[in-house]
Image (cartoon, rainbow, N blue to C red; front, side):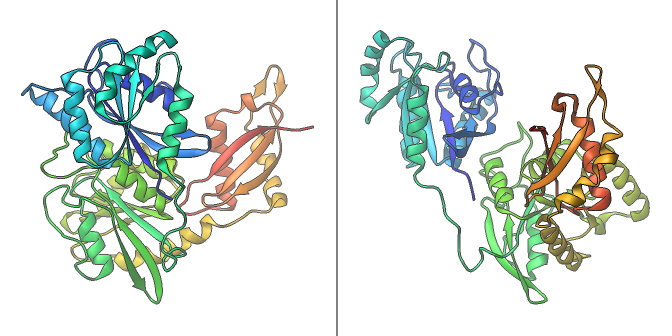
Length: 437
């Protein structure tokens, strides 16, 4: 189910990053008492009363300047508004209503979005008289102290209220079909790959990076089995976003990944693995989705054997925790190995739903315990394990000293589980619990 999107916008230094950090529950955005600290949009998942949503922090809204960097920050803020289901226009209660606030409010209205007018830096009940300055914006205003938390609960209740009821299952005709997301950096050939898989020109194909502006679902059939393909907008590097080329949206990519069962991550066979590829793979893994790595444009590679060996070395070195993910060399142009994708998808969908019996899992505890450390002079030990969920497979492992078990021990546990049950193409999650007597 796609999560609602909430964006925080406002002038410089009104407290957007402070509010962002409070809403996500940890320090994610840099907070300083000076304008212009936040230049790029930040995206994080937030939750209130069990309702999850994606939160966007934007750079300060500048007016009256031709500076190129300032113009880009303004574009980022406007694109954030375009992506959002709900806009929080944060205002400064100490400054009062300024012309820049009115200009931004007018911009927001052109997008026809739900808006909350929130007046920050209302630190005492006495300071609530400042709210009268903001009534000309229209509608009610919400008092807040993002730094101290005053009024925060009321704001969050209103945020959730404005989201409306949670979405139910989508189109019944496609609800049970495997959903396949296709993601990758701009210009790695996502639209061409979709056309190759579908066997027809379903998407507009162009060599210009970022021409796919919205996620578009398509149903395809392979030997009688149907699949839903979700093509996503390109994921761009920070500072490389051009509003004239596309309405870039990491949020749209995240939404498509969340809606998928299996995600195809396209890499450019002519360029090698770059930093942005690793970030995209992290998004897929963090969402707990099935993963297939497609090295695209393989028809442009000359010495394929040497190149493939180099690619595997790089992937194992840079993305070593993804040994479970199948890797295919493909070409959307020549349709090389396109038909091999579907049997792998079927296998991954099946393995994501597989359950291991508690007895079978507990037979692995002896191997796990051999690698556990001492803790406060005593041996850390796993007593039993059980699978608690599927899609992705999730395991609760009960130990006497959970604090002794670090990330490297958890990786070793995953390796032991995968030696018996490979769980091809899907991440698995392991939770360490204190043994209950």
